[in-house]
Image (cartoon, rainbow, N blue to C red; front, side, top):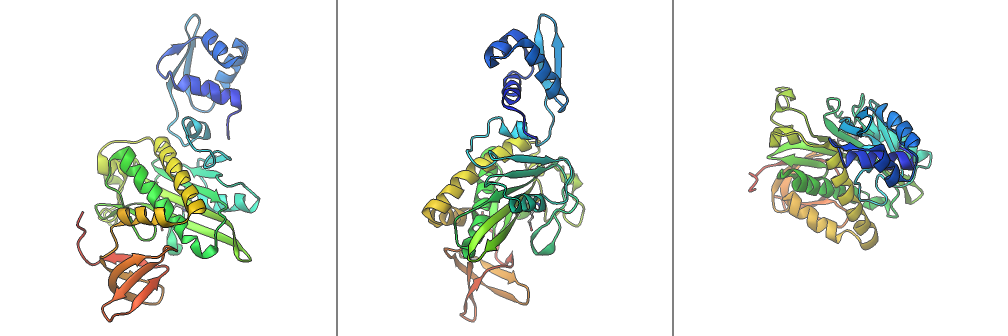
Length: 333
Ligand code: BTN
């Protein structure tokens, strides 16, 4: 649900003074509506989980906002013009945000439509794997995109999403996030986030692309089971502090919008260069497990479609469109 204009403005005014009293008169002047209307909107905002006290002669005091990925929280301070600005759907629990976004896209949802969830019952990863996240601790979202690009280039959207997420993490949390081809965000070799990009084509053109992100944010280190504790991590486990999921989402959307515009209007060069910096994969020895075979070799480059180029010891130059990469040499960073 998205709040109506005046209600969103009122929430914004209250949130900017969290912990401070603000009089009904001041709010009424600021928003250009009556004090009776302020009181009605405050009552409605409280039903969404905001703790607001009121006292005669003092006005209103917002003490607590819900720790949820609510549309009205995301919109406060979101500096994009498309991503998240053309509709936000929030689920406390859904099957998969990618599935919800896909259904919305099929019904004509515009580019930038955002689906967020506190929990998923059937979160999906690549290759039929599932994505597990404890309720309220992760960032689980999907965006509807309608890029004017050839379907063969859609892999670039995954690379671009990875760059946006890694940059936002580095900037907001100081974590040394790195990209692992094609869709993982790692820190110190452990997985912090995964991206699932799904596309629908009509004839030779992209109809829509859904790009979904699962990012472990406030999952305590001890919550990872012994089987995955060596391969998975969270922002909290890496930095020993809790982070605002809303602030991280806003930062990711902001970078995403900039990179998406660059990719769709100017081509992939800028994003590929940044991807290479953040991925550290070029020059490294890797094993790539694909559907039917496994190969080893040295990564020579990523091509203009986001395809991994690997030179085997036998001298074959391979183009890898999809697979799981294992690094065979130690990381230098
Ligand atoms: C992977 O690592 O294989 C990709 C994981 C992607 C998980 C996210 S969670 C939000 C969105 N909805 C899904 O069902 N999957 C993606």
